Image (cartoon, rainbow, N blue to C red; front, side, top):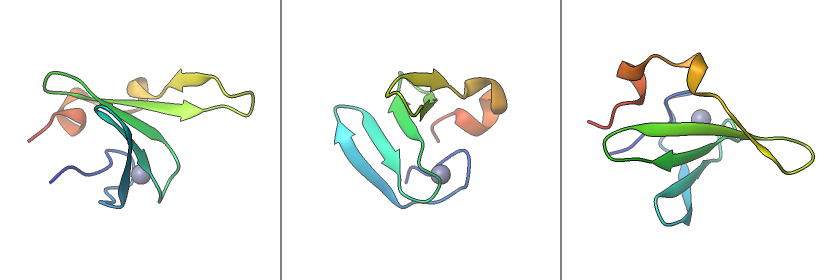
Length: 62
Ligand SMILES: [Zn+2]
């Protein structure tokens, strides 16, 4: 079961192919080969990466 690397919530909504949205902390997650990529939606609608905030271990799909 996938969980948000930011808040550990499992309350994730599917928004596209390999794309999820965390309803708890409002970040977007996209699923790579074996890694979760995290993005924040800015007020102007652009995405900025949050990957720097997490170490690779916490973003790895188990
Ligand atoms: Zn979250």
